[in-house]
Image 1: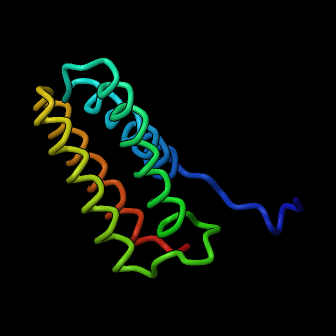
Image 2 (image 1 turned 45 degrees about the vertical axis):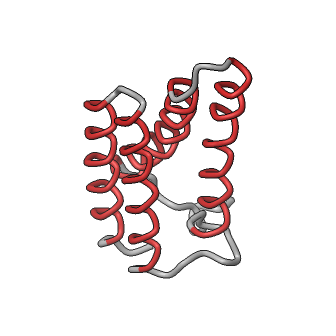
Length: 116
């Protein structure tokens, strides 16, 4: 890619990407923690992050043909982050859930204010 077509990656972009990865990891941890049966634990630990990744890939990924425009995208991201936080808290990791929801929502709110 030429320098003219290259996009700059700032600190906020790095934190946002870390939040996306953290969401998938936390959903897997929550899925594992929510059940007592090993089969159900494995199923939830796989399915929860996959569902989130599909939603993200279709509605929020930068190269998606169905990407939501802002502010609808920010609302969808906030709902996904809040749902992740609630699931993580419900699974017994209250502080992780709260911290994730606050940091991720604040990061993406700040990013939504910058030009794409």
